[in-house]
Image (cartoon, one colour):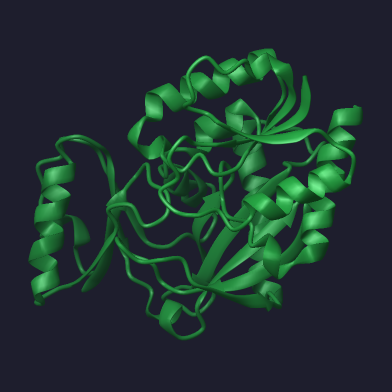
Length: 291
């Protein structure tokens, strides 16, 4: 029996900069912790007192198996974040649900599998868009396109091809991500611990983030609202809070911040940029183990 299994995958699509930091911090706290791959055969998940989702970044290619695995782990151990959160957050249709609850969200069209419309019809008046799968991690199959440029035809063909097998999103590109930047606001155990500035990322790009930055008050307020509305949509109690959450926000068309993504399953938490957040995360995991 171990105390904490950090869930990863057999073959990581990219390195996880949080992994070693968190593993060593848990062990320094006196906890028996290991990294286990969710897709490893014959793993006995009941032998971990708690399973913390971290770098399960290949799940976008095995969504049904991943959801079944999360349900199983929740039955035989304790899963963070919980299985009901995984079920709600794995598909980015949650953006439309949050928009329906009044949350300012990046202008988004959810395009269901098999939709016969082309990019021109879906994009409407948007002259620059981002096209990506509704189930995605990192920059998987994510393209940026400008109307009238070669990228538009490439993205249109990309959209048509992938709609044969999966739901897709078409979103208005926000120019502010190249100036002010996309801000990733990290919450640990219910508190905003830090934020970083993220560079725009598309298929084939590596993750690039800044040192920790101060979130603007309006960005922090939006993140709090997003988490409150997500909790209401899920019917979650106020306590205990989610172990971790990451709200990616950027200035929208009107200049005020909008939600780009809410990451509740396996986000990078940029722990190297915020040692206090790492300590808070370890203490929160230890507290959950102690009941």
